[in-house]
Image (tube, rainbow over all chains, first blue to last red):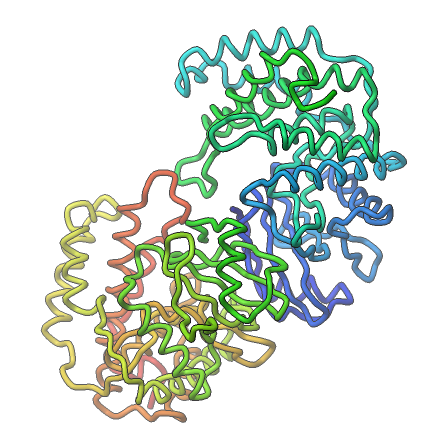
Length: 320
Length: 320
């Protein structure tokens, strides 16, 4: 939940006056998103989302993110579209922060994941990967192998305070995963954070994808691996193979996975679990006193990592 | 900022199905309001606010609050109106909490107070007091003199940790204010929390009042005293007599203040400052670790209290 920066009424009026959207008729901070300050703005023209980018997002990356939303929308992906001000620019400044106004996407993110959600997600993710192919801007994945090592160094000394023995388990994983990490799989633009709260549904349709602020170039199948972790485990930590099969089959109908991708899935899923384990550990150990954001339990991702470690092959995910 | 309870999609669908509002097309937690969980819900019919009442609101008081909104709206006051489900009831249960759906009120609360805001507020508050006259339900003010004494006992031992000497200053105030507190002023339903974030404006119009969850019976002029504190001090703690005069004159055009009310204003304003000083102190000293709500600085209200203590009469507020 997040409003880190409030916006004065004069500031808001001056900001909106640079667009052709009319004046604000309502303005409310949203308690979602942990990286930025988000507001629902209703203007005389309709509903929009206003985002102020806080310090965890690098200003230099914003043209990549906003351009990506434009590119995806132009290629048939349902996502928020940056609104351009009259000068043609979507990236602006408000309350001393980089800021953008984007279109309001209808839909509700699913609190309880059903197999249908996973199927719809699989198809939409593949369409996203196909649509991203000819996007001209580049951004490396800051949370790839090297980034994990840096995170581990930052949490190593205090990690065992969260769970005894976790530091050495992570260290072993880092070494093993790095040794076997694939070198050549199909790459492209991945979302890299396709958790349920970033995917909206309306009835039995997927209505769109939001929050592109981790998007980057990486193995396309790594995006699937992130989603297997985020969508296919039950609250009791059991892996739901029906959900995984639905996700993978729907994905494959839009962009078939090659054999190397299929064989790499267990390792990619281990890596994805390790990545979220590390960032959650970091956030857990570095939460400021009186923080506005309640950190998520890192141990959930340790259980997921252990599941993928004992997997023998892609058939564990319902394939073949 | 507040979403204490999340709502599952199945729960939300079942809840909305009891109304004639259609299905949800979007659903977002709002980062406003410190007592309850609030969501903007867009349905096929339009925008609504969904509120889940958390434990600081007594369930037994909810019929008073919801009935008051109905009564005020029926008497020309712009405020959210509780939506009745098909069974005729507005007060329901969702996610284990009492819950209500209310109409969405357009407008933006002012972050920077201009004299015009204070004028418009004065007129709207008086209209509210007049409209509340024949409301049939009753609710005592839990944060009146006796409530202040209870709060003081709860903070006394640790108050000096916030500011040395504050405990004895508050104690002296409590004695002095209780001794001189008026016994017979015009009473009625007051809002009791008319801070800027509860009053919406659209351009140069006041578009409505929200958040009736402190409303109660008390001296009508005490509501004015709360607003003098909340609206008429500048960020540097200077009292802005122009704003106060605008507020009071606009109020008096709708409901003229009698002499006893005018003479009581400085003491009522001291009492109102003490009430918010005490609740802020309490919240400051009792904030849970990792709290989602950042408590407000109590010392702001000590400065306001001291201002009213040195006031000689109602002319300090721009009258006469």
